[in-house]
Structure formats: C-alpha cells, structure tokens
Amino acid sequence: MSNNEADKSMGDLFPDLGPEAPVISGIAHDRSEALATVRGVPNEPGMAAKVFTELASAGINVDMIVQAGASVGTADISFTVPEATVKQVQDVLLDKHEELGYRSFDVDTNVGKVAVVGVGMKTHSGLAAKFFNALSEKGINVLMISTSEIRIAALVPLEQLDDAVRALHTAYGLDADQIEAVVYGGTGR
Image 1 (cartoon, rainbow, N blue to C red):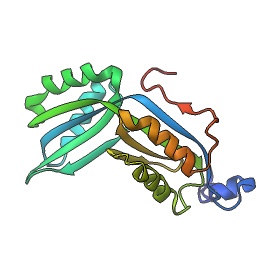
Image 2: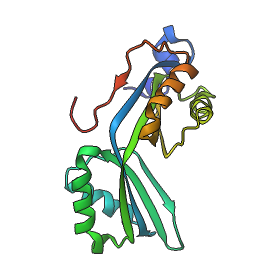
Image 3: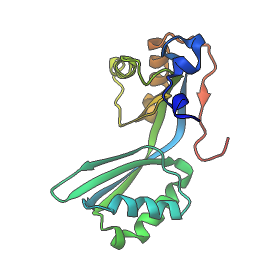
Image 4: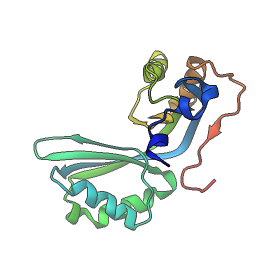
C-alpha cells in the first residue's frame, strides 16, 4: 500500500459510503469468554511481558487486556481468554507464581462479550457514547472495554449479555430479526 493509500479514509476508499459515514453492520456476541485477573503484580517494566509470554508459551490466546494500578508498587492485570483454556491459564499462573510475583489471581467464566461492528467508526463521534448509553439505560454493567477501527466491544456479566445485544440492536436501529454474528472463541469456527 502506498503512503497515499494509507492516508485515505474509509470514505475515500469506499466512496459509496460517503465521507467516513458510519455503517454499523451488526452486533456480535460471544458467550465463551472468561475473565482472568492477576492481582498484585509488581508494577515494574517487563512484568506484563512476562505474564503474557508465559500464557503465549502455553498456546493461550488473549483478547482484551486492562492493567490498572492497585496499591503502591503493584498492578492488577485483567484479560479475557477463551473459556475452554481456563484450566491452562490456572495451571500457568500457579506454575509461574514465584517468577511472576503476583499476590493472587481469579477467573470469572460468567462473562460475555458484545460488540458493534462496522466501518467509518474511527472518525465518527458519538458511536461510543451511543454504545455505552444503550447499555447504561438497561442497567448493564461494563466490566471491560476494547475498541478498534471497526468495533467497540464490552465485556458484561453473562446474565446481561442477551439484554446488551437487544439494547444495542435498538440503539443502532438494526432490525431485531437480522442474523447476528456469533463469535466462537478459540474454536476456529
């Protein structure tokens, strides 16, 4: 891709969309997520790299990641993995406890991911506000957030996932009869 093409917007590349016209193509959801949190990791350069290197060495795919300061000198690292790999995650963390130096960890399998997917989202203001307002109005608690140029995703309690999908369908004016994209984490489907 030439530099000229790299600087073009989605509207430039796909003129029928108009200049950066947001096109929300659907709502995706995934019931097969698990949320792992490693608590009290030493907050120093290279610790996150060590955690994710150990997981990668075990063949564990990580999706969403958040690191937050905990107490002075420590951080909590939360990440999502396919539910099918929870035992492997637990085994790696237990096996590497001394090397990673964390205080504790927990895994929550009662979570699901919901996302709006589309093009032209990067430069169109208000899409994230609409996403989070729709969830808030239904009393849905957002546990984790992930964004890219083509999606806004949130991890929510599993018992609220269906409500989240319906709320986002309504908020973005998508036909409730439309076929939803379902993501099967870690299965290759």
